[in-house]
Each structure stands twice: as C-alpha cells, then as structure tokens.
Length: 301
Ligand code: NAP
Image (tube, rainbow, N blue to C red):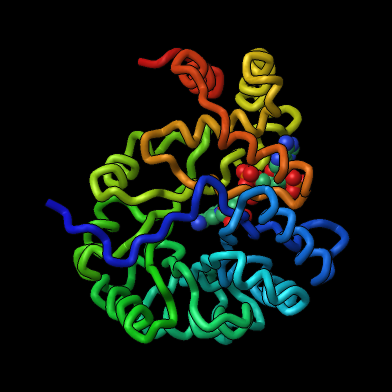
C-alpha cells in the first residue's frame, strides 16, 4: 500500500496561470496585476501558477511587483512555480541552445531566485518543469529534498513527467511528489491514455491541467476540431443554464475522477469570472462523451 504523501498540495478546482501574463500589447502595471489577482481571489481562486521561464524570465518579477503593490495578496494566495528550463537570454549566461537543467544545484538556485523575485519566505509548491534526460534522478531528488528540508518550499512535484519518470523520482523522494502538472483538454487527451491519470488515482494525488482550452485553440478561427467542439458546446449550453462555453470545457476537465485542477490562463477578468462557473457544473455522461466525440471528430472506439 502507498503511504500518504507527508507534503500534500491541493490547488483547488482552479489555479490562475501566468504564462501569458505579459503577452498583451499593453503591459499591465503592478497595481493592475494586483487588481487582477484580487479579482481571481474574489472568484474563488487562491493559487497562482508561474514558472521561472515565463515571459522570458520576466513574469515572476512582475508577480513580485504586484505583491509589493498589495502585500495582502501574499496571505491570500498559494504560489506554485517551476524551474529547470534554460533558453538563451541575458538571465542565462552561456546558454545558446534551449535545454533542460534539473540538477539539484540548479533547482535550488532557481527556487532561491523565485523566492527573491516574488518576495516570499517559502514557495507553496515547487515543480520540476520538464524531465531533464541528462540528469540522474538521484541528483534532482537531492535538490528537491534539500529545499523541503530547509523550508524554502512546502511541497514538491513535477510537470510533464511520464508515469515511469514520476515513479522513479517519487521513490527517490520517499513518495513526496504532490502533483504532476500536465497538458489536458478535449483536444489533448494523452493523460487518459498514457497512464498519467491512472497513476494520480493510484497515488491519490491531484493533477494540474495546463492549456485547458488548448492554448486558445478551441476558440480560434478556422480550427476544425475547435469549430466542431464549439458547435457542440453551444448546443448543450442551454441545458446548463446557458453556461459559457469555456466553463463547459472546464467542467469537462473537472469531471475526470482525478478532478484535475484547471489552470485558467486568461488575461481577461470577465473570462476568469465566467470560467470558474465550470466548477459548479456537473456534466451528464452523455454530454461528457459528446464533448469527447465532438473534439475528436469520431465516436469512441
Ligand atoms: P488556455 O486557457 O488553454 O489558453 C489561454 C489562451 O486562450 C489565452 O490566450 C486566452 O486569451 C485564450 N482564451 C481564453 N478564453 C478564451 C475564449 N473564451 N475565447 C477566446 N480565447 C480565449 O491556457 P494556457 O494559457 O495555454 O495555459 C494555462 C496555464 O497553464 C499557463 O498560464 C501556465 O500557468 C500553465 N502552463 C503550464 C505548462 C507546463 O509545461 N507546466 C505549459 C503551458 C501552460 P485571453 O487572455 O485574451 O483571454
């Protein structure tokens, strides 16, 4: 029997994703970002998901600026960050090729930098962003355990790990991996086939689902699968009190027995408010499979 994780982490039904935080033409001021985070909190979201690499290494500092503008946010939110991807930038001397870097020493240095940029004493959850094929898992594990021991992180986990990579690392950290953050939406079904969700069920951990709208593809003009899916969502919406289509997609994700945390990635407060309504929607079996079918363009095998 698997022992319960002594450092569990549950982000709730929704976390706020910050990958695209600085992508709009007009850059938000720290006060505007703080107001957006307040909006998320009022909508029931109390976890912020970020990563060292977001915004070409600029997003963590922007979040830190918002927390300085409104320090109360530090108490309201749990903060998740990720590290272990290096891309050419002023931040990474000597890096001329995109690469993964999940050595223990690098993870510790990155976590310390995240704490500095965010202005926090501890990270609520620290994730290895991608498996680094070149680093022995013992090395990665040693760094994660040291961060836990020193109290710099309260929980540890991974992102984009295959089930066997997860299992290997989890054994080396005594079953302390709290989550696997993976891509999941009706247009990207890998976790239900590749064993990732089965593993989460077995270990009783809650996965986090990134790009829940396929990175916006579901609503993009001219995307064949997206168009089919939107037509079906529009057809069933009246049966759910005219629920917004994105909320129906989030409800579809949350319906999986692992109840994956939806990492909501919109920069628009109206979409944040309407999206979280998906947490209250219980799709019928008929409609869950209907969404599967519309997205895939064929019936189940
Ligand atoms: P997403 O929700 O799939 O895509 C967000 C994009 O869709 C935004 O550009 C958004 O534009 C657009 N969008 C949202 N609602 C829309 C609607 N109703 N109509 C049209 N467009 C809409 O999420 P994501 O940003 O790809 O990912 C979410 C979060 O997951 C990220 O912020 C990050 O925290 C995390 N993530 C993790 C990994 C990893 O490797 N661990 C990888 C990718 C992402 P607006 O802003 O204009 O609404």
